[in-house]
Length: 211
Image (cartoon, rainbow, N blue to C red):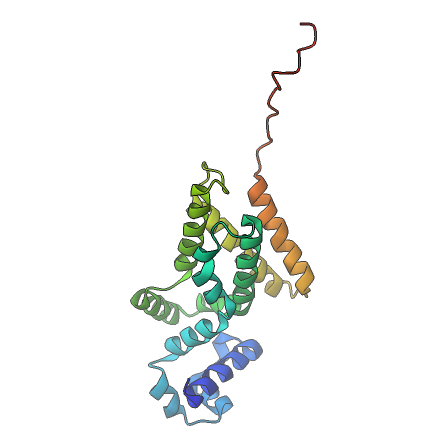
């Protein structure tokens, strides 16, 4: 990646964490990166494209985890695969949730961001779709029950991480990596177990009392 472009992305990340989106201007970003403001527009068409680049870089391992998810079908356990995916998702969501939430305070910037996502065919719906495809494949192997809807299950799983990330930021909670892992494990276990009570099936080999 071009060094100036990378400097601008890293400078934007630092300013977003420190000052928040509303106070981060292109002039401040250029000054923080140590480059002329004109250099920013040489690499990015506008502020929304720069924010998009920051989000893409923040994905970290999550992109790779989603890409190799089809190779995990039938491998390890479904629980292990889901926990691994949700951990990568949460690490990404925790980084970007302040940006996403701040966008609602700037409607023109939000609209432009939506435009970029639509143009490039990316967005949170792609993560949901990738996870749903994995769950559907595991259904065919009999490792996931047939009567669940994969798309809905995928939305629930990924939404749990975003919800946790948002509240961790909002409440300024210091969550240890171990506690975050436990939260993910409990989420996966709850979804795999389900909410409805299981009805015991009578064993026909055991005689009924009084017969």
